[in-house]
Length: 183
Image 1 (cartoon, one colour):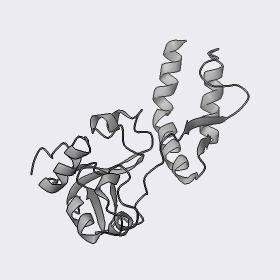
Image 2: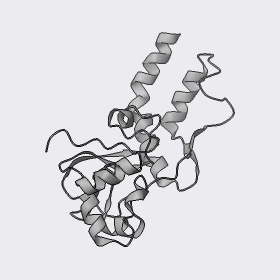
Image 3: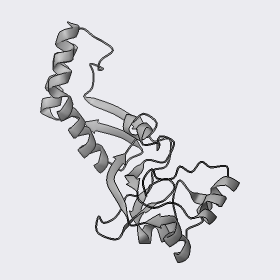
């Protein structure tokens, strides 16, 4: 019976994950629910036949995804050349978003309404993008060392180091700064 359960999950997991990523990104509510499509409901019915009451509740086809514990960071409004990444936490937003609200993870840099500070603390030179919805549970977020940051869009790597003046601010605030491996 366990082998049958494993085979079902293996055959349908990519669809469920895709379904989760697409649908949950479109739902603005704080309490995230995912309405399952016909294919996923069929999978749930088959799993329920395995007599595993802990797999899914029998009365509903809604899955409670998560309650947002940390306020999420702003999502970039465009994905063109105006994207910038914070040099400390690697959060990706547009220049205007950094100037309006600063960095959600690095409030001590005080980037709000300060053009010079935004230019010093962010860079347009970075590689790759990852969207993280639940950093504390995501293995990718932990691997990238962003597991304690706000949910949002992050870069995989930045190609510049934080200026020494900003590194001193990090030390004063007792916040860890890990410089990029390759410059």
